[in-house]
Length: 406
Figure 1 (cartoon, helix red, strand yellow):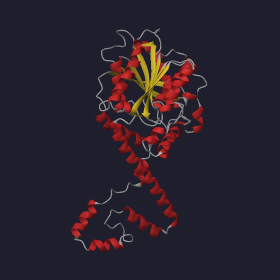
Figure 2 (cartoon, rainbow, N blue to C red):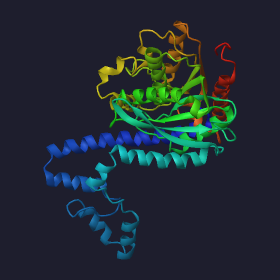
Figure 3 (cartoon, rainbow, N blue to C red):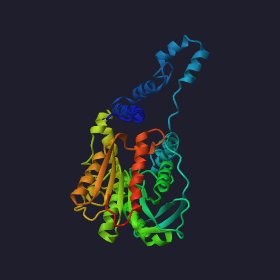
Figure 4 (cartoon, helix red, strand yellow):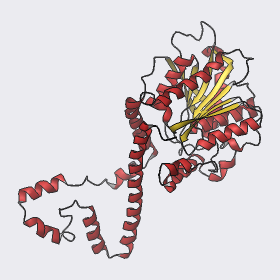
């Protein structure tokens, strides 16, 4: 099925950016090569000619002929033309270095997330929010944010179901403070009547695997231990994660089975990456969108390297849940994938693996959808259906404990 029209427009813009990026890589390579083989003065002249705006003088060495032509024009006109066509000032080495830091990338991504959500997201409802800090043995303390439906109380009324949730962001970006992340948890909390406990896990590359998984497992243990205090029914717990967060959620399900054995009712995994070895990557949708495959593959490999440090660890089951020796005893799974996503087989393959181990699992592929489709609820109908399907799955936590699995 063709891309949703809204995503088609975004894709064309993204493709132009990727082509420009590819040209930049080639130009940088050629420039670097020339600087090594061409005498410096001649190379400087070549670079000045290439970088100067058309019809203006870059340097004396580069612009003798151009200067002669400009002399025949009115000086005022030439000056105005030079100013209007002047390139943006080059970034200083310090500024370039700053823009490569994880902190700068996160701030920039957070600003972009807020701007984009303002165009494509639906304003979320009000809910009660409380932050807590959870100690993690051997790893950094982690913050969890508890979203509670308005009108409910941890001390008065029945205990509510809860879902331990993990945001996406290639293990390197994202936070419970991000506008789209916070809005999704608010909306799902209100619409499903289920408490969300969002884990603000540490980010790579400063904190690598298994930090995030251990933080998620510690948050699950904390949630179970504090269930009565939080007004949560410990027999009605689920896990949820998107993209890299889906990886962490699935890994926490494995850790819970192997260490704690607490009965979990459900895991909802959205466009998850479940195999960091890269063997499940599906380049067909990338080729169909005419995105340069080497750029897409390079980005996917970089994600694994940033998270793992040592990519040989990708075969470990808590890094790649699909690689676990057995999946028996895991909670039922609802898995959502997107047609135009290189990770679609990660999710669908994981559903098959779970079913082969006797775990109730379903996988739904949203036709015409991209990896980030779920946040576009204001402008794309399939995103609203995505939200409804997640809410429907979470509402099953209200069913009797002995009811059949999904």
